[in-house]
Every structure is written in structure tokens, then in C-alpha cells.
Length: 279
View 1 (cartoon, rainbow, N blue to C red):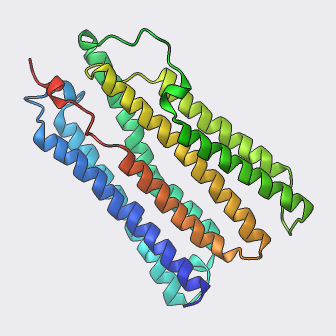
View 2 (cartoon, helix red, strand yellow; view 1 turned 120 degrees about the horizontal axis):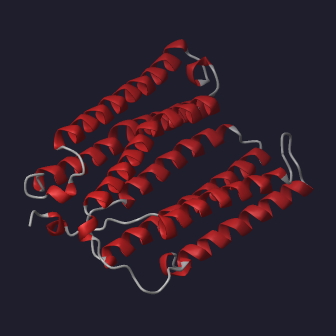
């Protein structure tokens, strides 16, 4: 197998994992919860009629199915035509654009979840539990290990950029690379701030459960930022070594790992579903 074959194989893994396997995991979790905790017995768990939720699930399943078929067809067409580049176009562009297409149902599901969460908060005003008296601090939700990884990834990126400033390669953007990192820091820093200080947790759940959920969200934001920094550092190194083709393989693996971490990050083990039971 040559490099292009490995790229196509990595892309196929992205197609299967992100548009088939992980959506099935998400759907299985949701449908399992709905089966175990019916709207009749646990009305506080459902901000909208259960039939509405089932329709949204069907749309999510259909959308991912269509995107999966598009991805498989892309690989088949590429192999059938016999071209090195995906869809006779450009590997990097196809991989990135297809990932954006794959991410759209998950982003839609996330926004829908936030909308339902807001509705639950409004419907259960009488069940709101007391908040902590002490103000929240970032350090409460981001442990030392995550901070060390974040600092280490930044230092590694700085060292890589400054090395290539002294030893540039064709297409190297110089100090603009540092501006890109600053944008990433602001973006993920803002999202972390939102989850820690702005977002309102489920009013039905205990303070401990809400704090655990906030901690998980903060962990996820920091972990993804570290992964992004490592990814762009690897891109610089591979470009500097003249191994740009391997960037496409790394990109597919990176997308797979990011989505895997995000999907398995959200679990229901800290939720006390009995609090949603009809009283």
C-alpha cells in the first residue's frame, strides 16, 4: 500500500466512525433512557412530548445515514476513477469539508439539547435547588494535570514555531501561527467560561451533580484545546519535513479521536433520574 491508499483508508475510518458508529452510540443512549424512564412516570425529564423527541431522533438517524452514504460513495468513486486525490479534487479539502458535514448533525443535536435544557429549567422553576454560597473559580473545575498538559502543549507549539522561524519552509506563515493559537485560546477560553460561569444546570438535579457536569464540560474544553494545539504542531513538523501527505492521515485520526472523546465524555452515571419521577 502506498501513501494515498493509507489516506483513503484513514478517510474511510472517519466515514464509518463519525457517521455510523458514534451516532449509533448516541442514539442507543438516548433511546435507552427513554425506554427506562417513560414520560408518564418521569414527566420532569421531558420538556416536550415524547413523540417530538422521537421525530428528532429519526431526523438525526436519517441525516447521518445520508452523510455516511456520501462518504462511502466518495471512496468508491475515487477508487473506481483511479485518482490519487479524493473525488479527483484535493484530499485535504475533501477531508475537512466532509468533517464539517459530519459534524452538522451533532452540532444540531447539541443545540437542540441546550434548547430542551432551557425549557426544562423554565418548567421546573419550583424545583430549583440552592446554589453554592461561595463563588465559582476556574481551578475548582480544571485539575492540575489538565493545566500541565495545556501549558506543555503551548510550550511545544512555541518552540516549534520559533524553530521554523529560524529554519523556514515553503508556505510557512511565521508569526501569524502565533495569532492562530491566540484565536484558539480565546475561542476555547470563552466556551469554558460559558460552561463554568454562565450555563445553568438542570434545576432538578443536586448541586453535586451539577458541579460534576460542569467539571466534565470544562475538562472537555481543555482536552480538545490541547488536542488542537498538538494537531497544528504536528502539521508544522510534517510540513517542515516535507511529509505533507501524512497530514491528511493525521487529520482523519485527529477528527476520530476528538469526536470519540466528546461522545464518551457525556455519560448519565451522575444523574439521579428518580428526581424526575412524578410526585
